Image (cartoon, rainbow, N blue to C red; front, side, top):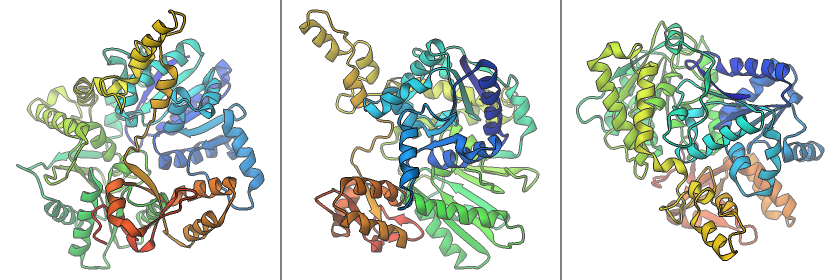
Length: 527
């Protein structure tokens, strides 16, 4: 038992390396089960299949995430699946999302608490550890310390951009052991990308960024551009489509969370087909938000990244030249000056720290072997970034920003008052309040809207609206998650009559006329 780290460059095979560690550890120390945790369902589905293939038994891997759906005649399979996911005790390998995992540790739901016992005497692989939300870091560290110190559990934290969780001022993880000692040696061995600083003066406007990307795309067969916001991704993709003037030489793709999961999956499959077709003469250009930057197994000759945190930049570099399309790929780093970050203050902070580190690298290259891809640069980034967001790591309460979930679980004002009222008998921790306040994804001010993406979506929407049984309605809502988009309240108010809200089940359905087959839903309603 203990906490271990696997730090290797993007594309170096850490999923299979982690599985090898887990299988050997399970056999040697008689661990009961292996957990594979991923931050995004796209990574989870991809790597769960890879794990099952290497094990040689698909039925040994329980996939537990929101994208699992069953056909109308799969009642027996669905019942078995529910039993297996109820407590995680019957499967040797469980592949689940970071949301499910963190809910099991902290949420107040009975279904989450019931799974907690399965985490003892187990092996837990946490992939893409850098993708954990900032607000959960202290809680996560405390839980990992508990599982490794008291529950005989082995924990493996995997990432090419490993955060310094052992160097937080408080709630740091127990000293982890590094499986790979000389990371920079591996960085050099797997070097396939050069990061080029193309930030000029005040940066580019969105149109200028699109012109820059299109100019570079003419020199390579495949180009990926990753930006920080959905609105910027759409503007750049629209501009590139105009620049290509429908030229059959170019195939332009767009990806963002304004597209439903089924739509995004279709685009990624089509893009993968074009990228792997060596006979095709088409030039591929993809403009995406950050959803593509970590764990997605796609490879482009050239990547352009809008300025962000160094961790995200290195992850974006992992989408470049993965399959050795060229001797050395290039990631061009640009700044888009009209990219409205809005309330995403952590991105602004990360941008400034990245600028500072790039300047240090330029002035003192010897200190950073490997430049922006070096461990020294990454450690410096996390050290400064975490220092600037110290309070946010303790999970501030939405209704009471002065206090955090850490407060509720330690010196809780609610619990202290209750303890005094009860004559000092009760514990002062407010466990229930902490559990009810915990949510990995903050959907405040957002609403789930089902879109009429295709005939399959329309068919199941009809079944949902015509059903009078709660069980059937829940089943259809689960199935329709692949056709669901999160929309802010102001967008719903703008669309108005385009949203259908059924009073009986409170479901929102977006008319097909408001869903674009390339861009999904338009936040600015230009459709």
